[in-house]
Amino acid sequence: MTDAHKPVTEADLHAYVDGFLDEERRRAVELWLSEHPQEEAEVRQWQAQAAELQAAFSGYAQSSERDRTLLSTAATPSSPSWWRETALIAASLTLFLSGTAVGVYAERLLASPVTIETAAALDSLPGQSKTAFLVYASEKRHPVEVGADQQEHLVTWLGKRLDYKLVAPDLKGLGFSLVGGRLLPVNGKAGAMLMYQDTAGQRLTVLLGKNPENAETSFRFESAGSLETFYWIDGSIGYAVTGEVSRARLQQIAEECYRQFET
Image 1 (cartoon, rainbow, N blue to C red):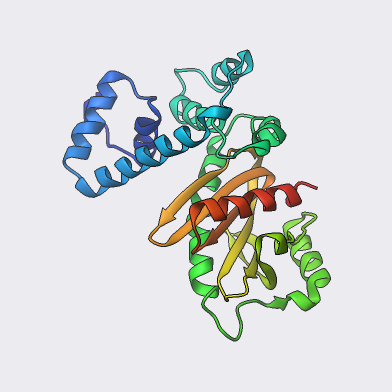
Image 2: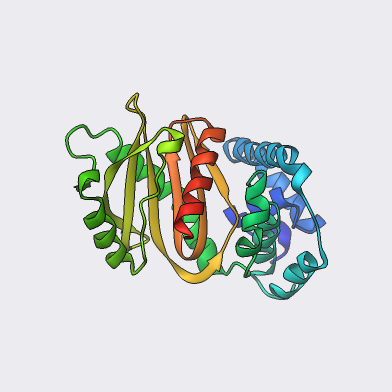
């Protein structure tokens, strides 16, 4: 089967946006997009987001010989997953962080190539985080199972279920206080959700789930209407922060969570 007749997958679309398709496959994807306006609009949005991030953080971009080593050792071109892994690693080279955060966290977030298993876990995080937010953030009487008044019990209980030394990030400096948390499934395994609220009653959630591979990824974001989600994988845990706040605001919160989760 030639490239022109292969089905176009979501992975193809990401590779197209990242510029990792050869000329023949790129033309095939563009033809497919011209016949699927909904998917084409989504791809255009991804491209605009990527351009926006590159423009915002271009002043912090640095390259090194290590970047080329990461790309060359990820996989070989003959591997079916080569372009997907390479695209994910390339995405990780442009961290969606600002200022000091780039220097502080770049080494850890570039520590290892992204496997297919990790990519699958990463792709599922924003959807699960948004679902948890929509289900629980609007709940008036029972948004959480364990309240902030039992914080020590909360983090011990959830941490045991995730086999992880969990902390509940202190976000008071950013205007959000802990409401509490609950146990919920993430990728078919025990996961955790922490909920925060500001003085106006605006809520946001932090989702944590097990990562099948011990790997790291860059910060990424996904928008769905008024909902914004920042998500990443760090070692054995995947994280996603979701809220109906501005992207810049949520990025600040996600970066603060990252700082506190790593301690």
